[in-house]
Image (cartoon, rainbow, N blue to C red; front, top):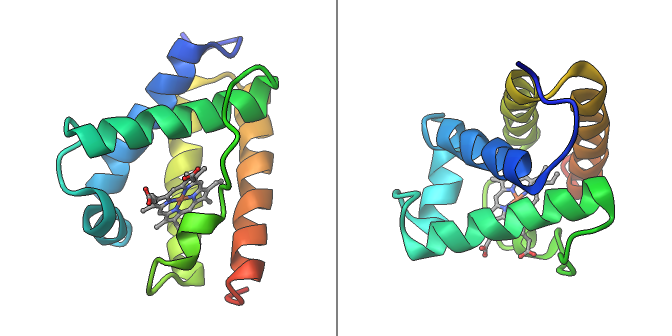
Length: 126
Ligand code: HEM
C-alpha cells in the first residue's frame, strides 16, 4: 500500500531507504563514505539521517524544525558533476515511487529537482 499522507515515520522510511540505495550505488557511495563512513548504523550516519528527515519533513509540511543551510556542505565536496546529481535524483525518485502515492511522490520530485538545479547552478556545473 502506498502512503497517502506525509508523516514523520514515512519520511524517515524514505530517507533510510534512499541512503541504503545510495550506499549500494557506485557513483554516489564514495561521496557519502568519504564524509560519513560506510556504516549507516554509526552515530555520524544516524545524525545525518535525522537531519535529512527533518529537512524533508520541514520542506513538505512546514512543521519540522530544520533551519540549517542545505547548500553549504556541498561546496566542500570535491568531484560533484552533473551525472552525480542525475544519479542522486534517479535514486530519490525510485525511492519515492516505492513509498508514496503519485501526487505526493510528484511533489517531492519537483522540489528535489529544483533544489538539485540550484545546487548545480551554485556549483557552476549546470
Ligand atoms: C550530487 C549528489 C549529492 C551528494 C553527493 C551529497 C552529499 C552530501 C553529504 C556528504 C552531506 C553531509 C555533509 C556533512 O555532514 O558535513 C550532505 C548534506 C546535505 N544534503 Fe546533500 N548531496 C547531494 C545532493 C543533494 C540534494 C540534491 C539535496 C536536496 C534536494 C541535498 C540535501 C542535503 C541536505 C539538506 C544536507 C544537510 C545540510 C545541513 O548540514 O544542514 N543533497 N549532502
